[in-house]
Length: 448
Image 1 (cartoon, rainbow, N blue to C red):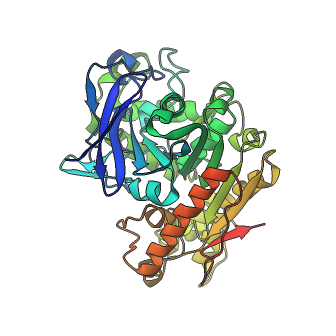
Image 2 (image 1 turned 90 degrees about the vertical axis):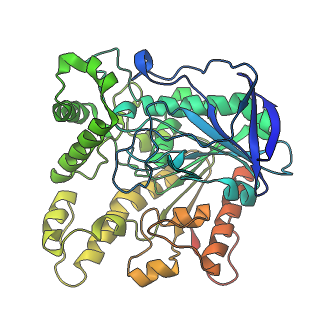
């Protein structure tokens, strides 16, 4: 094992590994473990440690909702982050902090499984090509991160997942200069629910000083619950766990398998009701999130780069049985267009309603400078499958790593990925539109 240099943080010394031209510091604690008496509480700073912390092994991710994720290494003790520093990077380089998506239910910065040290999101290639210091971190999901329990018991804090994100950003502000990053040039970037969380942070006064620019990829900008909706779902979720409203203390000891089962039931319940929101969406409570995140974010003066995939809706509409399409249209409040093109029309309506329109509305009306893009590239295996440029199909290309749905073994896909990483790095560096056209096709199209 090739160890990296030793770095002094405010909590103690850390040492990582050097791998493929990148220093990787894996599994640094940025908060105390949110377990026991600290479960369902806003995060507290970590304790200092003696000696050198060997940050050489991938952490585990938070407890998952299960579904479209291959993460099996999960734990309630999850508040750790990773830092990627390309070898030879100039001191004081831009910093990019990654917010993973996953419907507020799945995702993480940890390893794929207990038997596989491979990171679910390996950002080393991204750091090298973007010429930035990159940070990934965990935030709590599902029950522990976003379920509204506070209205039943004030000992259960609100929006723990958002406060985890702020705790990670505070660690970055206070320590990233020691790793070679510029603490005064921090770009947050995320996809789907991760991007929507950034939207929420943009409108929260306590978060405004923690980052300088925002890059939002396919934010599910409308996926937030009202207080009333959240209270109803909380009671439903407790019934799935067979826990009474007066017995919330039992939640601290619920086994992970039981959380998985309850998560699945809540997701199915929300779907059956025809609601397009993610089951564990954050709550507009008038206190943490004071109003519509899109409307609040419009007051921001931070540079914003925001975009969507050209057929986002294909990821959600393609698997609906043909016979159920009229019912789905009713659920989503779409006009149903019968005939051979019904599915395509519904997917396009879904893309526009839930992704494109809110994103472009924000970009048009935000007080700070903004740029909009549309991602239109389809890898050969996507084209072969007949699917469009669906939600999250840009992630494997951007990360430079294939997954079960998107393969990037061909040279064009790899070249597009390199270009994305360069463009995103340029935005992080300058805070300006990074557009530079491809020689052949423009797979990321600027929208005026």
